[in-house]
Image 1 (cartoon, rainbow, N blue to C red):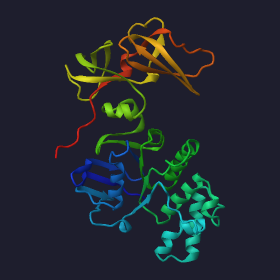
Image 2: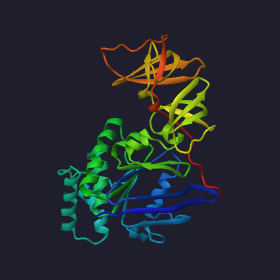
Image 3: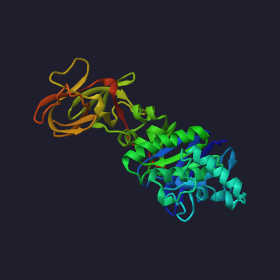
Image 4: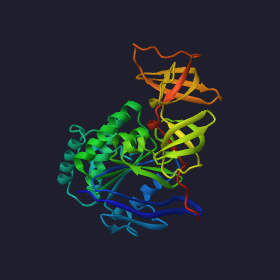
Length: 364
């Protein structure tokens, strides 16, 4: 069973510092929801409020429709997994998993049976009598998850649990975590600063900046339709052109910059005459000798070609000295351009968007 989690205009202040600013979001029962943002944006503070280690300064947190104010961590239907895991090295694996059950007075045979069930769930069926020191980093992560699940939480809270792992293991554990969440149908609330983790695992993602929830949506919409400049910059790479909206035609605009005028999509809240920034992702740009009709184009010179395995990143400079990036797939049959080549940096109007800055903090 799982429960939904509702944050209604939640604010958290520490003295004069506002760590979380008027956050309003409902996380659905059985959903894998990630809060994504840079260090210090307030995402861990949100997790601590949901788990009961902090009460919000204002607003309400409800789990399964029940107001959690004044209810301590031990009495909430939540389980929290920290980055350091906090496994007990002198206990066997099954004893680690069953520790919460022992505290609750469950008999030893029942504890052992439940621990073995959970070890099968996290794909460690033969690890019951091993010690923590005998496990790999990824196996320890799975034991921590099994221990949290042992107390049958309605909501699982995970605070950057994969950040200490190497890249390959982190990528493997993403799919493991997602598979465990699907099998258990427990509501997962995941905190991370890694956009790859959030986009790969989540049903929905909430982007945080300076305590403000900037956008909540499914991963593909977050990436393809960012709500503002912060989201566009934080999630994925972007080329930026600063300028002003000179004309509007429906959902499109003529956007004038130092590099020239572009036809582009309009983002939320952009009006005629507004100073804003045009964003275009490097994978939507092509380098061509002659500009194609109907697309935006400026002359550039290739500065550097960086081979990164399945992709090649090509760094170029425009006539005003600004640097931009183009991403192409590694295709051995097509030679990438060489430094010093003069080409055209081209992109279609529907692949570029003009956006305002991040949502502002509340005045207080």
